[in-house]
Length: 324
Image (cartoon, rainbow, N blue to C red):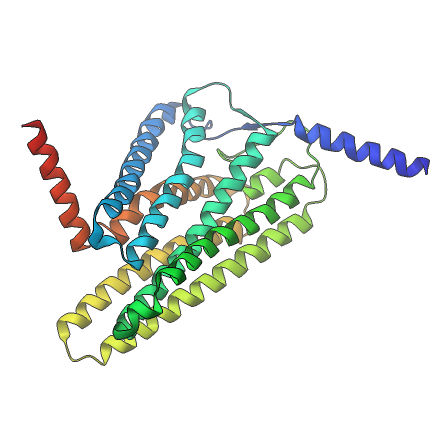
């Protein structure tokens, strides 16, 4: 009985220690002369990303012609991208200009939870977008029935819910660990392996859980995306129109290249063993995925579309007229 009480006390002490634990991020401190240039570059990328994604949501909401399943998915993709880059970028910018590089344990766990939720939600929204294109190309006459508002709502809600479930699971494994020592993390954000590196308990189960969840999500989403686009290409090849074939290959090829590149970075971040020599590459890969990709997504999936360009052109024209 006494041993059980002492065991419970030790667990409570570990929990209390974790609650007040503070992480210290090194960021890009190994390059002191580049702090200001990096701050300006990252601030520019973040500003453009926010303007693009919020602008895309606004355009889709005010244009009735864009109230279709494809644009519903695009608006949610922009929202998730905005949330993700806003979760990561402010702390990164802060690290580059402020001497205090610390973050509380609760703040770090919260950043990880929201960032992880956004990443997984984004993954399955992209898969839903690929399925939407598959239905539009392969079953155009049944498109309105097959892609009903109810199904769109279920796909979007399912993406958010699944992202929250996976993120909650991984967060649980992080909270189950105990943290001690200096709390120094050679990173600029609360990424899963970075948090685990500050743990002083056995993290093998936590790492296995992360690997299983990441691999499951990557395989499932890529299977949906690749299958959808392969069937689209096969369907378009059977159509005698050369213009349609060229357009389909251009769109599918661009989207597939972007998706595979993004998924490759995710695999690099979470499914590949990292060494000290690759930490800098790991940091820049995280920057690319958390800031550059959210900036490029509107260009890849939205701003190349004629309807979006037309709406944007009209908004700019009205803005100019209002000032003249």
